[in-house]
Image (cartoon, rainbow, N blue to C red; front, top):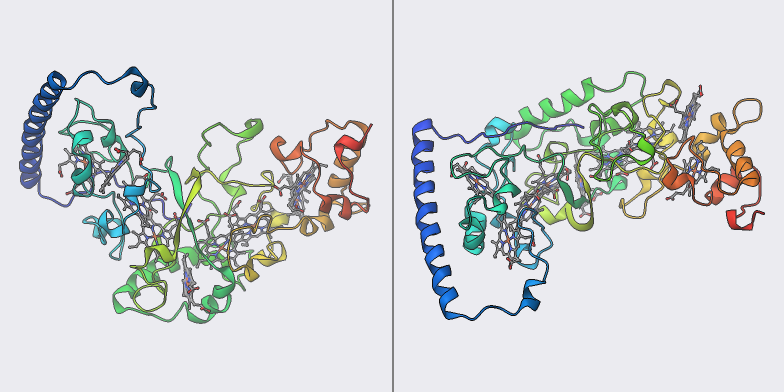
Length: 371
Ligand code: HEC
Ligand code: HEC
Ligand code: HEC
Ligand code: HEC
Ligand code: HEC
Ligand code: HEC
Ligand code: HEC
Ligand code: HEC
Ligand code: HEC
């Protein structure tokens, strides 16, 4: 992954100021705890017990924050202050580099903030729940789920990147631009032709991906070299999309679209999980396989963007290898056969895509029609 940053507690305050703030925070916690406690006892005396039916309702999980909750769908900068206080430590341009501060929540969540010894809501941002401990998860927590998809029209950027990425836009960003892009260009694979400049944003995966929530399918855990990383921060965009090129940096929704099909930030999804980009014979100009992406105005509905015809010349050629034909024949003999040369079993147990029969020179059939 590119740009996975690690900073846990990076508040820029002096030690004295921090101690004072914590003391103040603890004091107000106690005052508020006392108030809410007496309010609660008072309330208990007056109101009769709620009917049992209500207690059966699922409790709200205050340890998981959702951007889709109606009251959370406000302007992004009501919670995410731009830039955050730690930006100079975290990067080289004024960016969102930390969690929102308490002010963003307390106005509505006073009850959740000041109830109990270990309020679950603190764990949205903190590793430990204590009025004295300000240790936070790295921003972002790699185990967290992505609540947004990124709008990146590859088609519109094809020429632009080649033409403009050397042109400095805002003066303040010159340094950042050079740093971010020089780093990426340097780590490019030597053997890869870079005509399309894809590697500005997609370098070889550097760290092994995180195990998905339900574990790896078939216990097949792909290594870093399997993948190409995707951008994980603004440094891939803001040198152009700063103040003049739309979507500008303050137009958050121009690039971030709310989604409900959450997936872990560091757990990629694939059709052909076994395909490894780093294998010698697989290193080629990106668009020989990704034939659709440069024409794609959106990533939605793009799957698959790599057709199986880009594998045929090596994997299904007489006298060379017949990986697809052999697996199709195995299904002819045993309709329950699972194809695991390119896929994991979630895909390999389904009916073969009709494209597979086409490259094998056969009529598409369904498993259910085989006896
Ligand atoms: C009500 C407060 C609030 C508002 C409004 C808000 N956010 Fe967030 N955002 C948070 C909190 C808290 C987190 C950290 C918790 C988490 O990652 O689930 C977060 C995390 C994120 C993340 C990293 C995790 C992820 O889901 O990918 C992104 C990106 C993000 N916000 C973008 C936005 C954008 C864009 C908007 C406006 C459309 C927005 N946020 C509006 C509170 C808010
Ligand atoms: C404008 C009011 C408002 C603000 C500001 C706000 N919330 Fe909420 N939040 C709500 C409401 C309403 C709910 C629905 C559940 C409830 O009634 O408590 C909710 C629910 C939640 C939940 C339960 C899961 C979910 O998302 O539905 C969490 C966790 C949460 N908020 C955390 C936060 C955090 C952290 C912040 C600050 C970054 C924040 N909220 C800011 C109003 C708000
Ligand atoms: C939406 C994310 C978020 C939530 C939820 C949250 N915090 Fe924080 N917390 C922060 C951030 C960001 C800072 C750093 C603030 C700064 O730099 O001024 C911080 C700082 C602190 C500090 C250091 C003192 C200070 O104010 O700088 C303590 C102590 C603390 N939090 C405790 C808690 C406790 C206890 C809870 C739950 C009741 C909680 N936090 C909930 C984000 C959060
Ligand atoms: C300026 C940055 C940038 C450049 C240059 C770029 N991409 Fe992308 N690409 C992105 C972003 C952002 C995404 C969306 C990633 C996400 O889902 O968060 C993406 C997504 C993709 C995906 C889909 C990944 C998935 O989630 O399935 C493929 C494939 C891809 N790019 C290939 C290419 C190829 C091939 C090129 C060169 C022709 C290229 N990209 C050039 C930024 C870029
Ligand atoms: C030999 C064919 C081939 C070549 C060459 C190739 N790719 Fe891929 N790429 C694939 C396949 C296959 C997938 C997985 C698609 C799936 O199963 O969903 C993929 C997936 C991706 C993804 C999504 C993340 C991932 O790894 O799953 C990105 C981004 C990507 N490729 C970028 C590139 C870039 C940039 C280049 C050039 C440096 C490149 N690819 C060269 C075949 C290729
Ligand atoms: C080299 C400069 C450059 C970089 C880097 C760049 N863009 Fe762009 N982007 C442009 C230009 C120029 C356009 C307008 C192209 C057009 O309209 O033909 C554009 C258009 C867009 C649009 C479409 C806007 C619309 O009105 O349709 C989106 C969305 C976008 N970019 C997102 C991104 C994201 C996300 C990144 C980072 C992953 C990024 N861009 C990186 C220059 C850049
Ligand atoms: C030009 C496109 C673009 C604009 C405008 C934009 N973002 Fe992003 N943002 C991205 C991309 C691309 C990523 C990296 C992909 C990802 O991980 O979601 C990202 C990542 C983030 C993250 C995670 C940062 C990290 O370092 O892990 C947060 C938080 C975020 N954006 C919030 C915002 C907010 C708030 C705004 C508006 C003030 C905004 N973004 C405007 C494209 C954009
Ligand atoms: C230029 C030739 C070439 C192309 C094109 C090609 N491969 Fe390969 N691939 C190979 C070779 C050679 C091997 C090693 C075979 C062996 O020794 O067992 C291999 C191995 C594999 C393996 C086994 C895992 C590994 O890395 O050892 C998978 C899975 C695979 N390829 C998938 C694909 C897919 C999917 C495509 C199309 C998107 C593709 N390949 C395109 C030549 C190619
Ligand atoms: C040489 C690698 C390779 C082999 C072997 C292979 N596939 Fe595929 N498969 C691919 C590629 C690449 C795609 C995506 C492009 C496409 O759909 O043609 C794909 C797509 C699929 C899809 C569609 C998945 C989706 O979500 O769109 C299914 C289902 C599938 N294959 C099943 C099978 C079955 C069953 C077999 C065994 C007969 C098999 N495949 C053998 C490479 C392979």
